[in-house]
Length: 233
Image (cartoon, rainbow, N blue to C red; front, top):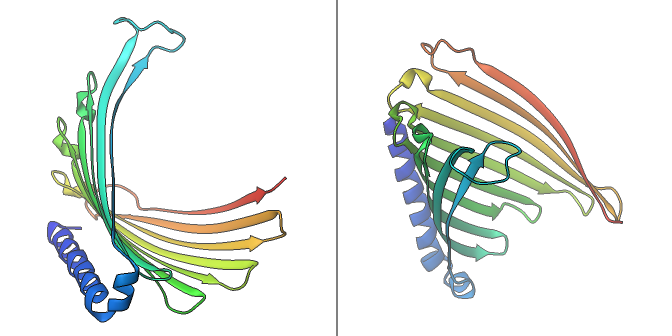
């Protein structure tokens, strides 16, 4: 992933959601009146103290590290119809360490989501995430990330539903481009309402990480299968 790729993705998401906004105002004026846009957000601040294990008293001798953080996000969401909506979300998060200053970082993210029904039982979801992470005292770890995700959900009946997900992620390091890599993911999910009290979820996931040719690192691939259940006593 190069910088012009990130620029292209940023411009694309702005154009797409601008078009969706215009569609909401002009193509479907009735729906626009029924569904008002929402703006939500959060402001969070705190700290964390690391001390030697087993020592409950806080003093300068047993403190391993300490950091402060703050996190803010703002989201604009517009519902267009039943089961159809889009949102744009911006987030900023910062951590400042007292000892491990090479971990000091500033994380900026922009996320977009557009979800809509193709048919009564078939639903689409497009998601785009852009991230810029700066390590304030260790510039070699700075990176930019872009993630595109497409999900298709199908409700067969009251007992069975299916989901397939395709995801591609590009990660680019600003100072060391030889560490750039691409991550591909495909997952299949099956939900089964086994009985009135028991729900089962099965998921099969495939991952592939492809590094740049001059990275000196081996490419990676993996598979994962999981089974979740929820039982009402």
